[in-house]
Length: 241
Image (cartoon, rainbow, N blue to C red; front, side, top):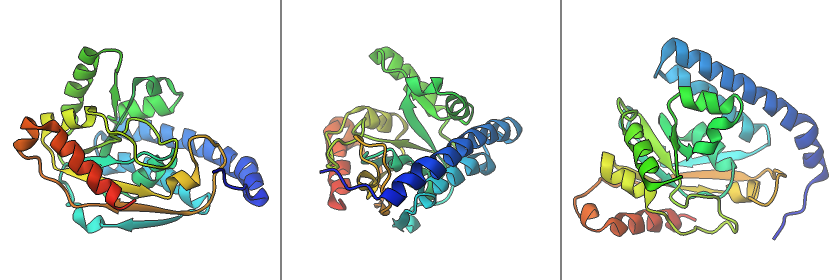
């Protein structure tokens, strides 16, 4: 069901927020390029993207709640697995998840002006899905980037929900888990579908909630039955929706 658009919010979004955010996106990408060149894999390189994400939320009057932040141990590496409801998932996770992590993203995003180059130089992981062999090579390259407390962030559904409900999980994220064996942290993102569903470019101010669940240590039985881990993560994420 489509939400009614507030005329004031509509005008503010398209006349003020979108132009300013476009400028902020370019400045953020340039800052990441410069910081990555000067400082490499340091916290300061991560800060422009975090502030850009917070601007996307605060600039559109979103209220943000984070539940379970104390479960994340600083400088420990994890695999974060979240439901995918909206483009605003990116801003909520990147702005408020208390950890440094690399996104896994489609190879096509590398071609986006400024943003693709910034993601590339800062070590985010592009997956070539043209063939299983190419995807495997992408994952092998990704593993080399994950050290010294750097985590990885995946959307097991693979694409945004068209209804706001949790979709079917794909095995790719859990194949990565079997390779690197980091603890897996299920994340439940709420409110982002209401903020900006896949079928709309209009943004609706609302409350966004990031629920951080208990980490799930990788266990030998997951090798014997890959669906066991997939089902467990899905159940935990769905429990908070």
